[in-house]
Image 1 (cartoon, one colour):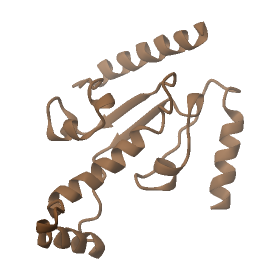
Image 2: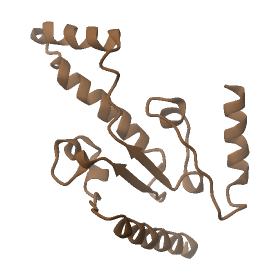
Image 3: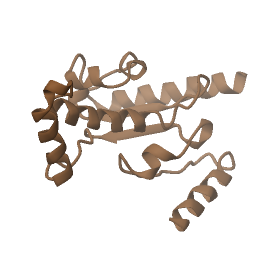
Length: 160
């Protein structure tokens, strides 16, 4: 963990010194996706691949789903609904890593067909993210949109 912390510190010290940037890969429910504050130029994009459902074969997950199903009379969510919420809680946590305050900005890229317009997945992400969601079929359109977004946001930041 000490190596991890020192690597993060070194990367933070370099922010603003280069225009080439850096790439940090992480998993949902890990320290990076939930426990570290990446604001302003420390993170300008979050890319998620798939929906991070908990491991269905994990004994604790199985037991929790069963417990919820057996105890619905106590106003507990059904097991499958609880399971869905766990996945989207993790994804919403990750989405917020690059937008930390009202003047911060970042691109959020969801690589999964289940986030297509008006899907169940779209309704499960934070409202602020869902209302700004744009779906693309071709990478060239994504590239053009991202390029224009970054140019617009950096020119707005420089104007402040």
